[in-house]
Length: 291
Ligand code: NAD
Image (tube, rainbow, N blue to C red; front, side):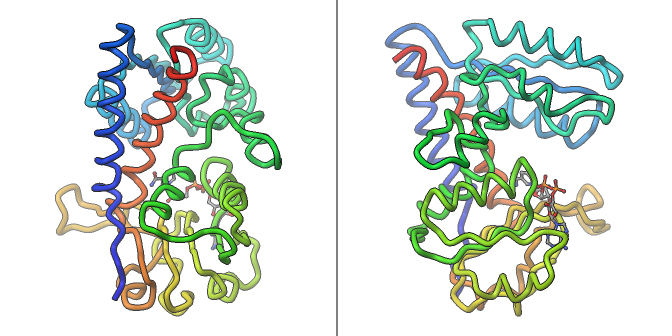
């Protein structure tokens, strides 16, 4: 029987612990962690993600500030907003909601976030330190960190296991592969140019799917007993659901049931963990300053 890994319940536990720590910090030193979010443009998805992040801050007692910039803003304008947050001592975490509009140089902008406040872990130095043995990144990106947290809290051993990560984006797939290596898994990466993704996936004890292609991973791709972490969240039309669409993962859930030993559902798996890890990183950033 396949265990369903409940990201909602696990993330609630984490958030409760964060709330307690924030309350204690406030009682002890009269200060709370602060998160600044930079949102460029009017993209609906991004607005929703940002709203959820800010709500989550409110619920845990973390202070948040939002800087909204127009779609056609210049790099200079973003830089000056970032410079202000970088200097602000009540702000401990700074994140730029991605993707940015085409005309902006993403790498250059992410490079501007102060390393000690890079709670998304997208600064090239944090990413580089994640990749290098013997070095410690100040922050690990929230989604990969959330995936590993789900594995650990579900009692899944990572060391020595074969893991496959499907996808190699800077925000999910690549840091996920690097992080699993840190936990001593044998990691394969599958991406759009991979020749035989099915066969590579069938070797894996742990499958992390982050390609953004609904139902890409079929039940036949899975080794019996594999643990499946499904990062994919794709809206597909569904006239019977409230908003006219529903979210579908990269893994064919019905087929995986009965083959996998454990699986995360979509929604309610990785998604809530990403936000919990952002709160966690913001608290850590403040603790480094205060404690
Ligand atoms: P992306 O489009 O930047 O990257 C997709 C990756 O998948 C690329 O590396 C590409 O090479 C690979 N890919 C494409 N087609 C493939 C195929 N046929 N086989 C194997 N690999 C293939 O996407 P992303 O930003 O990394 O996000 C991936 C998915 O995860 C999306 O559905 C996104 O919505 C979701 N996501 C979820 C969370 C969360 O918190 N749950 C967070 C971030 C992203």
